[in-house]
Image (cartoon, rainbow, N blue to C red; front, side, top):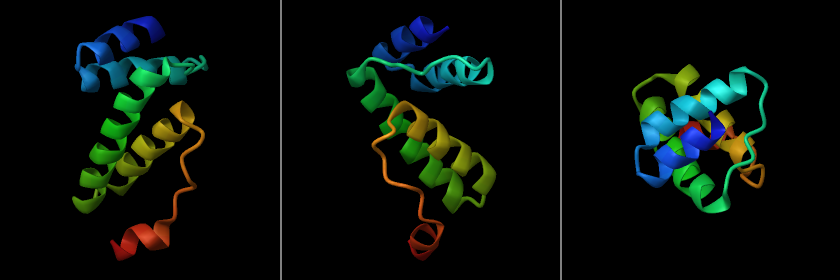
Length: 86
């Protein structure tokens, strides 16, 4: 599934790729993704998470951020106060 997700991401089918990565995560698999693919996916997750948060979908927003953090552990810790201030 990880390889399928990476292939989908390279084809810019990011929502589908993220579904595959979520499946890998739910099965306890490693999210060791090619760095180039990881950047595309993380950027998409963060953008989508921001949109979801602004729409009041806080749980889904946080899930996106947590998945992005698992793909790229270098991301800063989530600061709910800063996020709430906009």
